[in-house]
Length: 484
Image 1 (cartoon, rainbow, N blue to C red):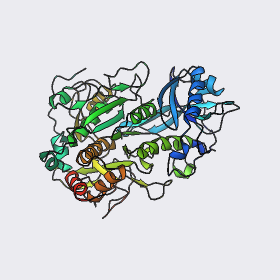
Image 2: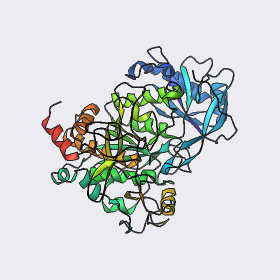
Image 3: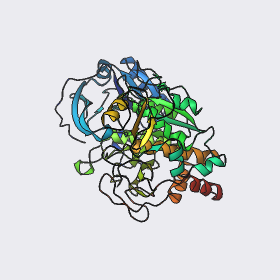
Image 4: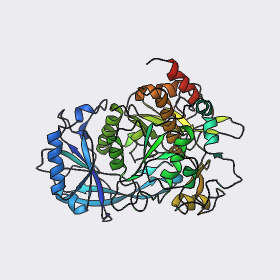
């Protein structure tokens, strides 16, 4: 087990979010999983999970979402301490966050004589139905109504939605043939989904947002990340049905992303897209953290339920989510004013050190270049964090106009989620692996540029862009002419 080394402080929020692993049928705890090839051995019997949930409730915690493996909980630090007999403490980590910046991020841990040494993992002594209690790590987005649905005019080269994105991903011919992802349910876990005239003008199909953190509004998105990035889904699949899940707290921090993911998973969407990721230590710093094992198994469980799970590859980040086998991980390709393609130097790409044969990304969407990737004109709540920050960085918009230039793998992931929705409308029975295969085999190869880790693109699949830039119409032809 990893040794706890940070300097602990007392900066614990009033509400803490966590995950409880119920005793696995296979007898091996999720935290001790050595091979993550299937989540099924880690499913818990219903009566065991029921006892674990009752124990958590008796401690004062609220069960917020359930799966076959365990469940998420929320409550006061005192309630978690009642369950674990430990003490909740905080520590600060300097990490890369949104817009390529670095800042101190508060993480939580459970300490005490009867607690394991792994960061973020606790035990419930004396309760045999509970294997472990994991505290949620802050997730980082991979990065009021405006008066108009039309974006402002700015001087910088950029792409507009939906037309430019649909054209460059070659989705327009598919749209003209009636393939628009009609009725396909695409769940998106992010910072929120605020009303915006852009979505109304295009008559996009958006369900009421599910806000999972206590005291948060389903109609607010303090950061603007979820609202803006969701427009990328509709650029590729204008007929899709968006199911938004707000995993952010009142300040917009993604403190309940796992809870939102489990809630979204339980509704069985056809596609589940995620433009965020957690912090994982580099492989040379030790084995996969126990919290990552737990979380990877929950993601793997969604894939095994035939949900197309999409995760952003990251913007210079190294995280567990896009590495999970079966996940459709998405990187970035930049198309210049002449249409010439190159790998985005803003997005992540690498061979997974923990899962043999897994390369991140699988494929790529459209992303800008470092240092800020100001590339897509996206609709956001006026005066939100991104509205203010991007205007301050000179994107040509104002701080309260409800529009901003930004992108990152956060934008690429929902683009590819839209592509998946389009394929699933055409062939409703496609499995996640078949969707990924169609996108992978028909992607446009990109042979120039380097990614954020300095890995160059080359002929054929590589760690810079995966198989290349997704070609939606070619992928559609593939699934219509190939019998799985």
